[in-house]
Length: 165
Image 1 (cartoon, rainbow, N blue to C red):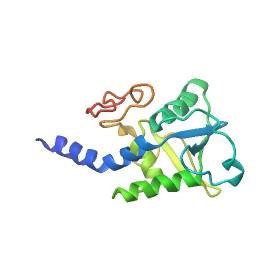
Image 2: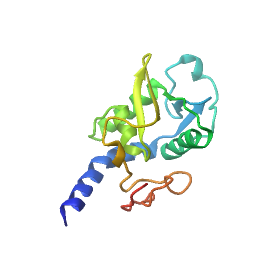
Image 3: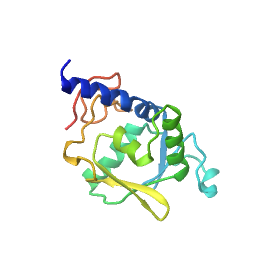
Image 4: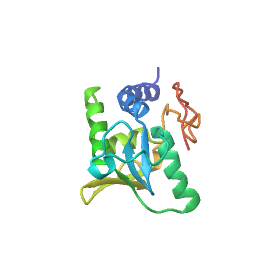
């Protein structure tokens, strides 16, 4: 096995717990886009008793939906993440032996480039360049979602070593 394949295999092993958490998440959103986890009580008690505002979405489907809003409708807003959902993702990753911040997790499990930052005590994300090697962010063995594959990736849910462009 050459050095590139070894590096790819190491990367997949490091990413596996993060992708496992992503596969288990089910998301919903209000407006454009206040994002909550379906299985986690919202941090805002006023939202706790309300029915889910959208149908549940997988992590990859949520990304595709929001990215589509940016691309097709030229929407320039932010995803606003519920703090309880972010904390749950961080706990679940740590429990699998891969402690990361929510921003690191989102950056790893998504296909497109995102900027995630804290604003007024909450995390928010939008499509765009960020601090890591933005020009080369591509899904390596990315997972699919409700649409069969995660947009442009060739990997599919069962693995694969596709690259997305």
